[in-house]
Length: 498
Length: 115
Image (tube, rainbow over all chains, first blue to last red):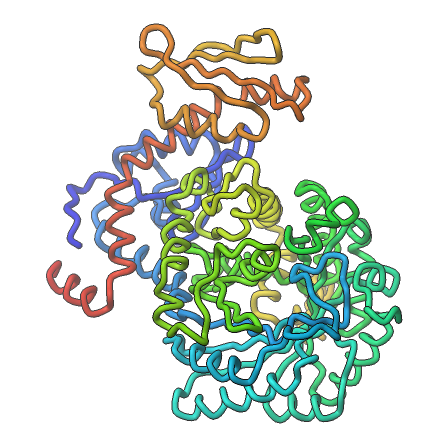
């Protein structure tokens, strides 16, 4: 690796962006950022020796933007930091989503999976398929395995959930991986024996909550005509009582109906005992495409609503209530810490297949849930194989995943290659394919890009403002614990906290 | 770099000096405007580039479009700076990536060699 250096100043690789006429944001390869004035930026580009930079030299050297005599050390440090941040790539593949049935007791207006009626035939995973699914899952070299049951409504095929959990635990006695289970349920139904099974086998629930009853029932409709919200509330309380207070997390889907009411929805989440919310935009799949007219909004509308909601959440935290937004939390972890943060939808190369895979009820395997949804819509482009006919190697070493990996490195993608947010961002090839028919995507027209840019712009505004109290809130999210005291208490010297 | 010339039918034409700016910088900056315009890039006099921007039908050809067309000038300059930085730092980037993704065993022996 030896890189000769004659002692002159060396510019290390970095990305930049003019925030306005006076300020330029610089981010190095490992995601460390700094802000320069336009004058200092010009000085940096012209500098050929440390003296040319004056006091700026030490700051830029500390941020790995420049190096001089110790170039080897700088390269080594940057490479090590980059390696740490990409550690998730060693966990090939950690998240395995298993569709136990395509049937569902709800018919949500934005259903991505185009679910079927509970009475539909041949829509359930059989035990034979489930058996092979577990074999393929344990073919993964990842030291951690999370099996997430999805649908439809996965609990409609409860025996297969039980079968997979039991078999996975059995297989894991020899495999010794870190094993987790999550059931993604609409919570329309709850049974004592399910709760007992979940408690005994450490199976968690992930559910959806669109806000107060008038929003939740509006688009999350039960097929029997009753209120899905009322049963959701009752069953959430039931599971919490039986399996633990934090055994259930919830996802929000933002539609045209609730985008203007996010503050109220956040209050509702807190009233329901949740400590976080994921402000999730509508995805362009399944019924969400058919109903786009009634449900959709522009990327700029989403970003405006997101900013307002995050302002509100920050205010709540400053008043002493711990509550976080999960997407911001995850991005802040990428920006502020040296740790690896594997988030399937935002990785480079894409997390599809590498970090997560979906097993449909009939044994077909897709790199992402969206790939399965496309197949339901008639496009089987992302089908990687079938557990009944293919081995782990054939499925995960096949042409579909090879193409995704090859074409989803943001370091080489048009516009992403020069984007200042590149070290924090990633690619979503299935989403790009849906947006424009090309897995490489077209950034200027991409809603995915516009939303992520808007959110990162907002977070960097906050980081650059450098309000100590807000930064404390951000760190409390990263560490997942509340502020030890409110800023007012701290100012008064009281650090006993709440 | 020439100024923005407003043509009929909602088109804008900009002539760019090929002596100062590279084709890659012009392409990258123009690509950013894909959503607003139909874009044509072609050779012009003295080996320069001519960029013609035509508003997409769905977009209004108002002050916003004119501002965006003028923005191309700054955009090309910024992309050229990006290219220059990339050229100065490109070989180091290769080394850093290579070192970061080298198997640990090879990394150790690589470090030994450098001592």
